[in-house]
Length: 400
Image (cartoon, rainbow, N blue to C red):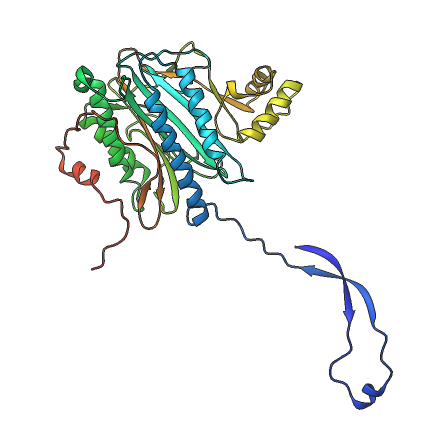
């Protein structure tokens, strides 16, 4: 409620006697009164029940998919990971510059190309990697429009023509790529009202076992919200993990980032090595007031340009940003995102899709077709698994 002082006019009654009517006109009087004005502010609907929100998600998804396709095509023998990721980020920023003036928009996940045993969060700025023929490249990136984030990841085998051919087509990496793509398709179909997060994790684990792979422990899928890429509602890559997470019901009008990482190894937790973090993000609950001017300026740049989304440390424009970031990291204002590794010699594949669960259907809005030349995945022998992997994406009830 707010109050404002109004000038209120005191008007004679419209019903007047003849005597009153004949009387001299009364001098109009004005007085200051305080009048309470009721303002009922409509709370903005930031869910996908709002068509404007869906439009933002879908446009961000279109640009994300276009960029993911282009970056995958850059993963050729002799290419530099640092150069590819720089081009990917430039492409993402060019896309979001096309429309939606006056709203926050930008990168929700900086372009990363993780080669072979490098599992996640490498953009080459802390140690460049030159891609060789046959390398397994896991590409991860994302965009947000007005704070609504979408992300995507895919895995390709590096080749001159962008296709899997020759000995690579019959190798374990090509089979793992097909398996990862099929597992994602099955998992998406479990994101339906009436199911739980455990149901989704169980399907991921069963599909991986069918293909002779292990889901990577510690990898979580998250419910997405405005400005939030790592919401508290999560889905583990396997239901039997020692890292227990709370079970939630899948609800309509929610958005999920389904993150699937499969390995030929044991699926143990990924490790850090000697490469310094390439990425960082602001902590939602960071309360510390910086002491150093460099830290104060770095925090201001991060808040203005990146909000709570991951960012490439190399993209900070302030020349003293790294010095400032050190203080911010120390006091939990920012969180470095480590480069993670799988054991050497194992094959790791990564697929990530943003999924809208609407009242009518399950809609996977990010993700690109599997690399050309990938072998067809082996059919499911287990009847229940086969049935669940083919659940319809339509949520409309059939008329009886």
